[in-house]
Length: 387
View 1 (cartoon, rainbow, N blue to C red):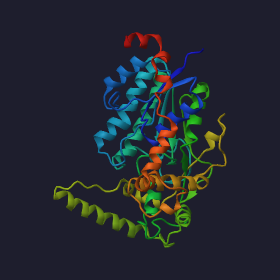
View 2: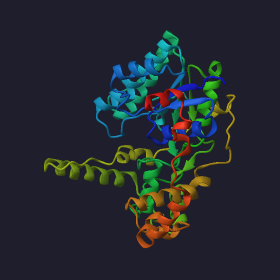
View 3: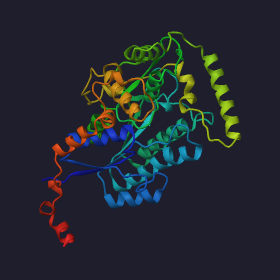
View 4: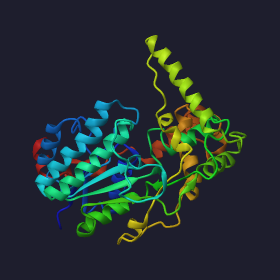
């Protein structure tokens, strides 16, 4: 049997990282061994951790999906979003293996049909997140051109998918609509944005790992074919949930920005009282709700990659995502008004009202020792240890 290829994935606890790990477990369990070390084993902020772990594991490739929180201070953004990826790149270059780096549309300006080269200028006025992402992309490009680094950079837009533990991006929008926290539309008509389907991304990563000659040294926009109008998406979610809000009234940017400034002042006062409080990260990008940003998929479409799910969009996946996240947020007591939208009684409901049913179910499923963990099925070396 051929040796399994070993891949190291940084950021496995996030939506993108977790989706990639699950993809390889499901579709390539016999040929790929994906290691997703926790931050305790490999901290992006520690060069020594990166060097030690990769020397120890000796992987065939590394994928970086990690990122500091959007509202992180300059030092954390610099260390996690910039220095970390560069140290990984130095290590993979030394080992002679590919490095796949996940970047963000935050590196791009507002506009339509933006190409891969249409990046923002690096200035002090940018957010910490955008600065660090731009810096990482710039340095990786230099390392490829001058040092022979084998890397690919994948730029994502607004990501959607299941199993996101954080409420941010599209999922923050979904949560805000479901929680009836948006009284009106904080955008303007025909404001288009690109979206990225997290479920498709692992297929692309696997393809570019198998075709390094074509994809090495290149940056690609990985986005759905058609951009989405923000107001249409919000109103579609509202209709699906049968809500009264938000009203189809467009709040002017000047008024929305005034409200943001008031919140900033209020939180500043609260912090003076010794209470920790921060402006929601999404408000940092308020202007993006009023300005279009669509990424051109032309370079991706002209490559050898074939979309495995060409008809799948944010709208086709919306029913599934709504049920998944409403169920999750209901369990976490974040939202309590949509239990009727779920198809069946939740474990919580059964646990509250009929615990015997759960007890009987677990007993019926079997309580015997796990067969594959019994001593007779263990490798010889482990049997010797037990003795």
